[in-house]
Amino acid sequence: MCLGIPGRVLEIHDDAGLRMATVDFGGVRREVCLSCTPRAEVGTYVIVHVGFAITEVDEAEAERTLDVLP
Image (tube, rainbow, N blue to C red; front, side, top):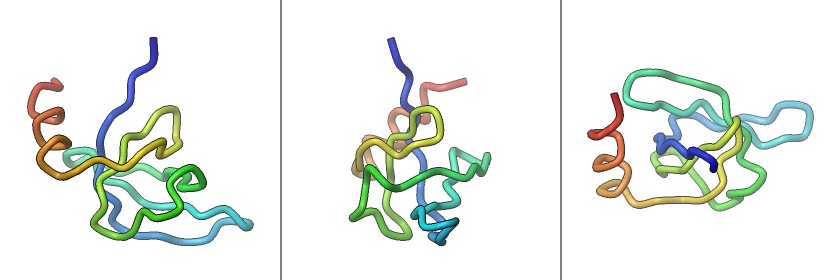
């Protein structure tokens, strides 16, 4: 079983040829690789698993998920 957490892309930058982002998870910010979500832009919500954004998700779904997490 895997756990993917939604977060909002705050900033995008290049790190040694990898498209990376600072992503906010309800107040916690982490660096995330965007190589699997090439269309993600600042403001986009993504599902993140082990440091990789694996898919995009709409804001309403992201908020519903974040509301039920401790």
